[in-house]
Length: 299
Image 1 (cartoon, rainbow, N blue to C red):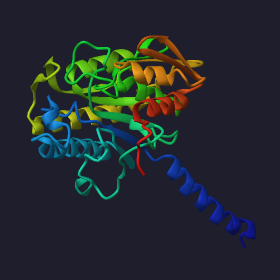
Image 2 (image 1 turned 60 degrees about the vertical axis):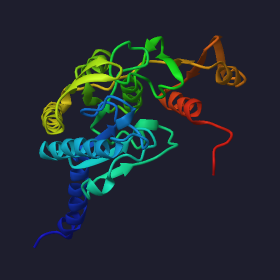
Image 3 (image 1 turned 30 degrees about the vertical axis):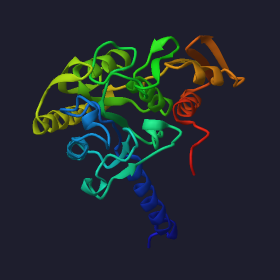
């Protein structure tokens, strides 16, 4: 007759098996912007006032779906999508699969990376663009084309891909793939590392590009997503050691002068303020404040 201890072990072993299975889940984070979407070149595609915006919302959603489908086929078990462009309400959420979650609208402390944490195995940037410090690229800017002229961390010019990679790196999550124009992809790979790059258009100027058709773009995104997940163990988180010094230059004098009133902010020239944070979470919160605060905000 078997010992009672054997039967007592069965529930314990069952729970251990379930927990081990949960630990082995492959989790992917997708941050989706719009300027780098196939065919997007001007404001006419990028905001509710543009005559092509509704069409390009569909293209943006289709790019996300192409990425999701490819990630699933490559083994992803759980996917979180961040709608990270403009008002954060661009993706047609009814067109996304039922088993994904979506981050929408603002404000959010981690900006385009809200919801990222240490449980994710990799992050993907879709529809990204080059930085405000870059003289090339379609719709090149960092966070605000209307207000920001330079954005540096530890004296390194930062595109949105760099800022967001550092936020992911805070949680030890690597960036595994990026899509956008050729300049945005090259800039991110040079800064962050050898991620997969899905080039869907080639920049001629700030408002012009040679572009793939949407279906051809979805195919490239799918191929590069699968390639990224196939070698996901090759990628390393992007990090900078120690305190982080943010230098941000604004087009106008008044916000710079007002930011100088904050005791933790130093004004280093007529258009630039400096903020030192202990990590990327503090830097992200400060950036959210600079780009989002107005005393007239409601409710």
